[in-house]
Image (tube, rainbow, N blue to C red; front, top):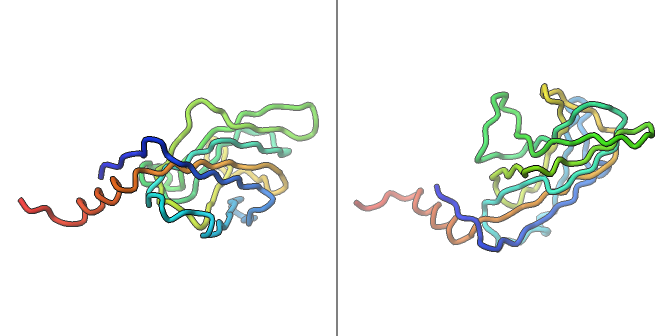
Length: 165
């Protein structure tokens, strides 16, 4: 199916604070429930999500990556456990905590169904071990860019019904 991005997309931004998440004490996954009223039904059913900004304060001094644990339509993970949205760079401030910021080289854009009701993220090390930041603070700023609604609907119709030859 060939999706076409809107020429000048209107983006949704979600600022997700660690302290507002439901935290899994075993897997260190963070879950946020997003009110359905936040989203407009006028947008396409398909969008790209990327990590626009991130800042984390925690005591651990290890390399960290942000992993998207939602639906992925344009990516593959050999361990079948989500997809990396970005790499965090350590920035020491001389205090007891290590500050992490997003490496802004090139954003990873994951194709996913639009208007997710639940968002799950996790911090992991390069060897895919979960990082415990349940006592840390910070935020993730996600950017949702929608595809052209008419092109998506037409693409779905073209792929759903056999064409007369």
